[in-house]
Length: 95
Image (cartoon, rainbow, N blue to C red; front, side):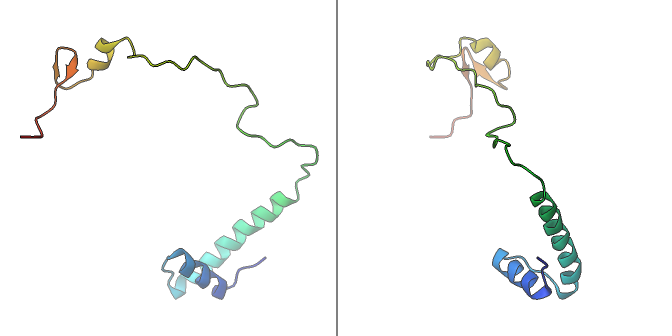
């Protein structure tokens, strides 16, 4: 499938992208090249290949879903620019 300048203009219009007249030919070559790569991928024999749901076929490690406070307030507050005891200190925003 080759894209002509009329189709390129229509795609650009639908995408709300301004394409100048002198850019149509280079853009057409680029998009036709991309479509050529996709056609090459269609030639690959994938019979018997199971689809992947992620990068690795492994069970996810599960942990108990419990609510905690983290248990390490000193580590969390170590990065605070200003603190008041075990709390973040922020400027007053309501008067």
